[in-house]
Image (cartoon, rainbow, N blue to C red; front, side, top):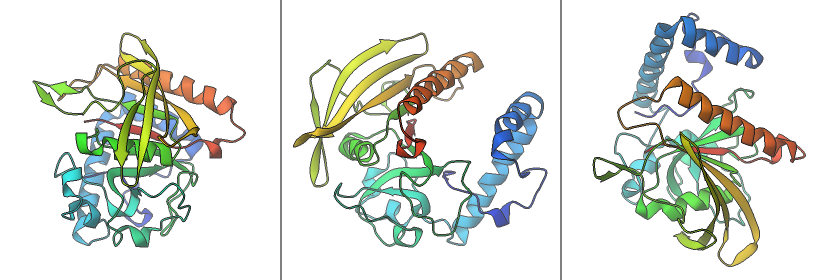
Length: 282
């Protein structure tokens, strides 16, 4: 079951589970829940799981593109799929036409196991255009497979994503849970193929702390290095499989991301010019 979507407002009927929270007070509410009302968080999560199951049964949330034979091998796990309603559609970089909700379940091309997550500042609507500059703050995706590395970088390039937050290792008990998708040698570009073109990725810098590794990468189309941008990957190294990180380490990760994001905001004319942050686990 997949939980990456905007829960429709008509389902938010249990006020004790889903109170209306002003965005300016959301952090305070979250801190209170995690400190004093942890059971409420568990119950809210269970309720969302149940509601998502209900929406799947009524076909209000669908997986048509994800389970189509031409796309199924692009999913790492058969029970973690991208909903049609908020999925990323990979397109030619010259195609600026937006994608609407109604097209997502019928257009089976350009599939990647990834979904937009809208900013809490913006209420959902029934047919909002899914574009990186339309208040989509994050992209949640799976750890790239060998056959999807090019598509992953295609997505990062297409939406001008400035950050990648990686919440997994590459191996667990000798099994690959996320394929290596970046170059390991400094200043030596590697090329990754996606449908229709090739992406060049160069590792510029690596810095290691006690709980994360920060890598600065430059990406461009292989045949057009003039249109490139840097991507900061924050690779959290303290989230073992089937466990949870310490609050201290998680706090360090969040603060590192916030500091980097605010530094980027400082140098941009508006936050609307900043692409969504990519977050992935295994």
